[in-house]
Image 1 (cartoon, rainbow, N blue to C red):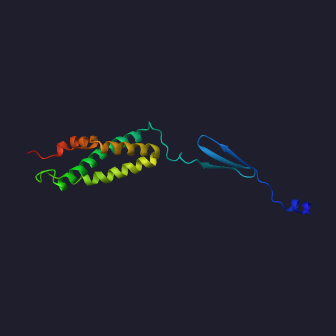
Image 2 (cartoon, rainbow, N blue to C red):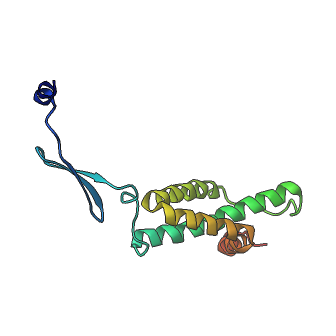
Image 3 (cartoon, helix red, strand yellow):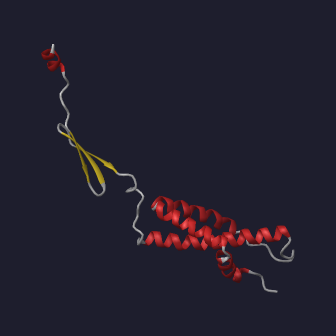
Length: 145
C-alpha cells in the first residue's frame, strides 16, 4: 500500500523565502523568481525629499488660512465681531479644498510623516498659532478704512 501511495504523490515543490531590504522573494525550483513588495515600501518617501518639504510648507500655509477663515466666520455668526467687519474673501473656499488635496498627497507620499503633520496641525490649531499666522497673511486683503 505504501508503494502505491508513493507512486501517486505529487512532485514536491521547494519554496525558498529570501528577505531583502525592499522585497520579499519567493523562489520555486521549477520557475523563476516571484517578487512581492513589502507593505510600506510603496509609500515611504524619505523625510528629506523636496516634494515632502514643499507639501508640508504648503499644508501649514493652507492650514493657517482655513483656520483663520473658520474662526472669523464663527466670530461673525456669534456676534463677537461687529457686523461692519468684512467677511473673508470668497477664494478662501478654494484654499480649503487645496488643503485637503495636500493632506491626501502627504498621506500617499509618506503616511507616517503625514500623521505627524496632522497631529502638529491639531496642536497648532488648538493654540492660536495658526489663527494669528492666518490673520497676518490675510492682512493685505483687508479693505482700508
